[in-house]
Figure (cartoon, rainbow, N blue to C red):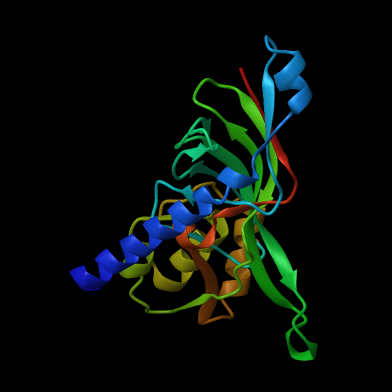
Amino acid sequence: MSSIMRWKSSTAALMAIAITTGAVTPLLTFDPAQAQFNINQPRTITIPANVTLPVTYEKEKVIVNPGERLPLTLRIANDVIDSNRNVLIPARTEVVGELEPVNIDSGYYNKNKKGVRFVARELIFASGKRQQIYANSRTISETQRISKGTDTGQVLTDAAIGAGAASVISLLTGNKKIEVLEPVGGAAAGALASVLLRKKQVDVFVLRPEDDLDIILQSNLVLSRN
């Protein structure tokens, strides 16, 4: 990719983040009773359902097998603020959740099509405070094919890899130095190897967190402010 294309890509990402985060501002609500009558008590602010929160990750890519579950901790990409410029969710706040498989019924010929999405369970603030959250990313269904003899150098560069995907890639390519996020148990690894002995190629999900895993609130997120 040329430097011009990289600049355009970065600019587009920054614009998307600014627009998404800015959309929170006019929609935040305060609890009027708390604000008016309980001045010394924490006030609550509600970020409504369907708001999108941009996320980031320490690696450029995450690679998983169709059907594979993978615990994952993302981070909020930049400060989420209210209309008074108060920071509600600071940048770098942890978003704890997992990648989960999704069955996609897209018609008679694709009844068994697989997808994957990130489901957020909890926010962990820098102070150690934890906040339950109900949010998930969009479902990703596009896969990338890896065949025996494939040069996976470009695919694996700056990637976090689930155990299932790592086993698949290792067995097909002979690359024994693939680092995995979590190991596969002996029985599961044996079963996987048995399946792969009969295959010459496999499809995996190659997710780019900053493009694919922004989370959408599925219910109101109620935050307290002192």
